[in-house]
Amino acid sequence: MSVRLLLGSLTIAALAGTGASQAADYLRGAYAKDSLQKSDGIDWAGAYAGGYVGYSSAQMDASMLRGSLAREALPNSTYTDLLESTINLRKTNQAETAFGGFAGVNTLWDDVVLGFEVDYTRSSFNSSTTAGPYGLFRVTGTVTETVTSTTTARARVREWSTLRGRVGWAAGYFMPYLTAGIAFGNIDGRTSTTGSWTRDDTSAPPPTSGTFAGSLGRRGIAYGGTVGAGVDMTLFSNAFLRVEWQYIQFASGGLRPEISINTARMGGGVKF
Image (cartoon, rainbow, N blue to C red):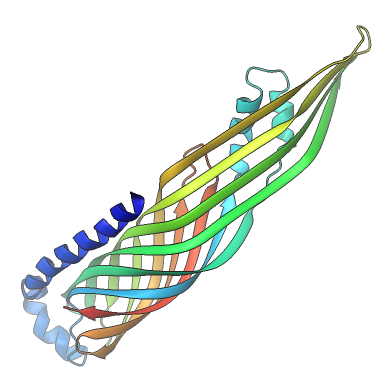
């Protein structure tokens, strides 16, 4: 369902872009003639669409879930804070190839290009990390409390999409630009911990002990923000090449690891 939803957003953007291109002359207004003269006759206004291939690096960070995971495994327990201190998940990094498509519309105001763009990306991130077993103890009078835990975090990202505003500069055959907006990702992220606790009171033997297990997770659409920068280069009157960098940060929602993705990509498109 998420794939259809994200592809649908591309279709809607392309249709909206077609209507916007019909209004491009109006949006360019009195700036059109001077702008085209200054930019060697290259017209960056109008609707466009294209595709790209790239290289993405994804980072998974579950450290912010330590407290929630400890309370899930040992709720309302005197050992909860001790368990939280034994959870020591590290950040992980994974790099994969990526590919996708984009569609958008530009308006031209003198040498300034303002626009809106939607894109869709497919990749195959599947990251996991395990920490432990780690143990800690504390002594309070005649009582020694010990907790030992093993914790695992994993995240799978197959696809994501962004909705971004763009601002660029029409510099002849080149148009450098900056982007910012919101991101949507199909993410399956989970953390879990298992272990044991022991309480040894020398004034009242024998020791008591027990085990615990807890997990947090969510699968589905995650939301975040994105920024980026790139350069479009005109090939023909209706075709261009693109080089772009994009950064995305997805929120954890309190149930799954945070995911951030850096992507360097190259592609091309056509203008309508």
